Image 1 (cartoon, rainbow over the protein chains, first blue to last red):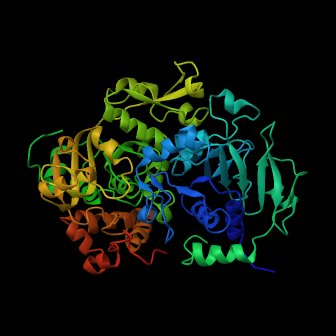
Image 2 (image 1 turned 45 degrees about the vertical axis):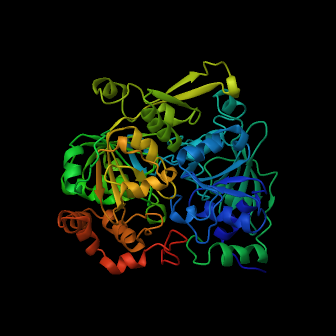
Length: 254
Length: 326
């Protein structure tokens, strides 16, 4: 059996969501690595787009920020923020964009918080804020969310709603005036969640080898349907080799 | 805005002339790339206070201005410095301790706000943030906005699409224009008149430049006008917007400057350590910023020529290949 870390598992699970022709809007860290893995393994014709304006660069080394000069190498064009967000917001190109985001808190409808823990005016913990996250979550068709599986993070009530998921479920996202879309999948260090087509509530769609649904539920403040869950296929030897040797040989993210 | 032919001055002069206590300012760059750091350190050295800072995603520059006690309010989309500080450390402390007031927007919204300022219109519509706390929660209260004529009366306004669903859009979010007193950019090349050339990603620098009453350019290379005008299609800052040109080699250090140098991982890790501890941060300010008279002296205290050689950009790649960044 091939040994792998949970971080590697999460990266590969996300990479598998990316298809040829997708324009991947990625942030830093694991989301960038997932996009690189997809491009090198299962979706060579996917395109990486950074909110800073870099389109389809050749990432010879892992950028440590979306503004890293490494994102600028051999791109199609080096533009600016306006270019990147127009590409996303314009439905002609935006329909092909898949976003990847992470957060401090998530609720059952996939709304996320990257702003504060505690009261907005006197926060216990301040996080960086929306960045382009709210823009991505507001306009693109598909979105991958990365989360740590912890009770305090899978919360009944967000301290601050930074980026919209399905708001209050059902049709409320559209009623608020937002584009069709919303998160497609939540990938954690234990499990994979998706959203019910009608209620838009999160449900457990997959668990990692050796992790019980009981343990997953213990690490969430709200309960979800677990009847549709199956075991997630672990990373293959080939996927791991490409991820480790080609995507992050310096182990900057993994 | 200034149409003179020669706007070259020293950094000390440019900051003293245009950055006052309480000024509304923005700085160029993004997280750990091309922030006008030499100017940031000079602002701290001059003890400027009460700034209102407008930032989409200024990481290092914003964090140092906050840490240096220069900022009292900010409009911000993102306060992070990549791997070196997932949330900028002095920014986090200042918000948690209530020493600065913040108003949160998204990156696209901030960019549109600079764009509106550049276009001379009061607002632009976005479609981001409907149904979120970016719309619902105002960091600057209505009362504060009513009393202060330098602030727009509202944070943002949701309206029905007045063109009745045209382009399948039921609602839009109007975000107010930004007009700064002064914006400071670090660019790769400029001439004495102020024509500027940014290489690589421009971030929102061009919109920021054109939304400012006064614009200071610091530049890696001060070049002859004739040189820049051979390939004018590569220039992105017209001189008419520019008030001051300052030649500061390594002026973005410790952030990166595409095709010139990389960010400095050694400095950024050390900074994260100082920033976590108030006493050590005071010592950092005292020794490295108040204790130096220029950016050159600041760099000399941080590894000097040897460090600059380590982060020197590969001419083809635009960054320092195989730099130890862990």
